[in-house]
Amino acid sequence: MTDAEGKPVSSRWFGQSSFATHAVVDVRSTVVVDPDLPLELLAPVGCGIQTGAGSILLALGVRAGSRVVVFGVGGVGLAAVMAAKVAGAATIVAVDLHENRLDLAQELGATHVLLGSVGDVPRQLRKITGGGADYILDTTGAPEVIRDGVDSLRGRGTIGLVGAQSRDLVLGPAALSTGKGTPMCLRAASPDSPMRGSASTRNLSTRWRFHAGWPVLSVARLR
Image 1 (cartoon, one colour):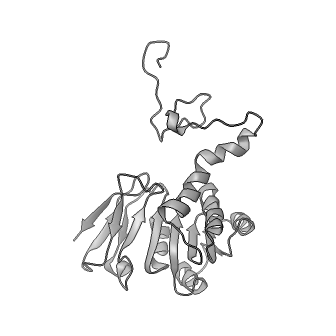
Image 2 (cartoon, one colour; image 1 turned 135 degrees about the vertical axis):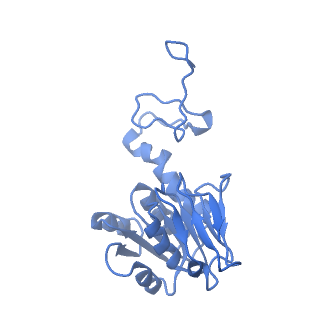
Image 3 (cartoon, helix red, strand yellow; image 1 turned 180 degrees about the horizontal axis):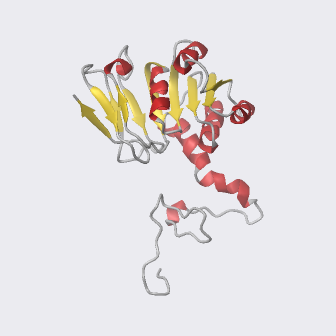
């Protein structure tokens, strides 16, 4: 496909063309839908719904009876909350800075909600989950929020990152102690992603830096 000047037309930013009148996509990314269905309801399915739900059901593999925390309950986070309910999670905690989002999260399946700007968030989450979460999904990309997530995990818990991180995340040795990360993996929404990182407690004198990117996946070990 070419434009009027004969130059190739393509879309490579995130594989889509947001806010464009036309989009060039891979055939694997297209789904034929009933023309009578409302596009305003179908549109979120193409990104936010499958990212949030896929993170919970596929990448993290949340199991029935587990304790789940979702940081940031916009479109992706709310989809994660719904998926956690479908997976049969016993405790589903939504954390956000906006009370109206938390109200909606409760309507969609969250058993608990927490305003992220109030109090010691990790301590409150450990209390709600009875010692820490089995699975945490961060959709914010904020390093300080991700650190709260790591501190809210129970031993051998798993945290998934799908936010666009703007700054490097550095975890000190203590963050990976007490059995956390044996192994503890930070994963992408897609289990087939070629860029995945994991952190373990094998060397407690090591700091771990998770480099900013989209999504946050690459890992370097710093001594």
